[in-house]
Image 1 (cartoon, rainbow, N blue to C red):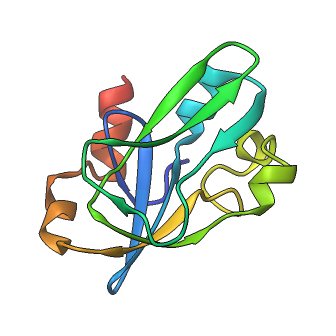
Image 2: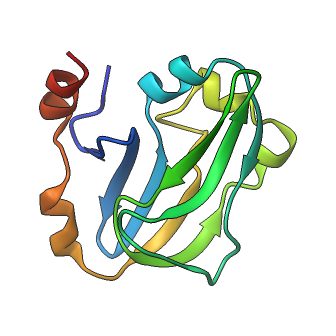
Image 3: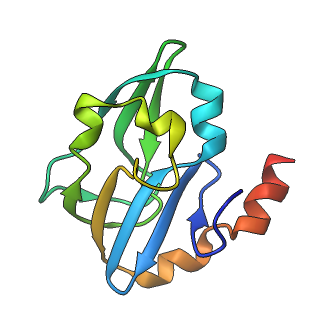
Length: 124
């Protein structure tokens, strides 16, 4: 259910590192807890995000949830498809509904994140 090549946070974000690039999204658990997602607020290209700090939010019919950066870096791409179809997060949170791509500042930060097995154990 949770891709083995991703790293996860206890705040329910994931990051897929590919060299210096990190793709960030929310987990399937996060989207199911939120319910029907109606709006996504993401940073602009060029913004810097810092590990553990908020970088945007996801709004559902139930609540607004902050997004927390799994790693530090500069935003190099934003998934603009989510502006028109934020509900894609409910159907494909680990795939096409990624949130942002960043240039990872410190790859060592990845070591502090949860593996897929650790994340599933954390969920219980």
